[in-house]
Length: 126
Image (cartoon, rainbow, N blue to C red):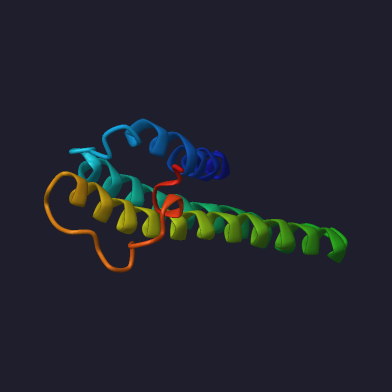
C-alpha cells in the first residue's frame, strides 16, 4: 500500500491542489499540512525500499529460485523505489516553490526571484 500513496499524493499535489487554490492563491494552512505530509512521505519511502529488500533476502536465503526471478524482483524494487524517490523530491520542490507563492499572495513578502517567470510550472495552473 506504499506505492499507491505516492501515486495519489503526486496526482493531488500536481493537479487537484492547484485547482483548489487557483482562485485566490491563498492557503493559510499550507505550512501546517505540508510538513507532516513530507515527514510521512519519507517514512513511506523507507518502507518502499526496506520491505521488498527484506523479502528479497528471505527469498534468496530460503529458496532455490532461479536467478532470473531474483533479478526480476530486484529490478521491480528498484523501479518502485526510483518512482517513490522522485515523488518525494517533487513534493519537497513543490512545497518550497508553492509556499513562496502562497506567502507572497497572502501579503507576507515579494515574489522570489527564482519563481519569477515560471508561470504555470510553479502552481500547475495556466
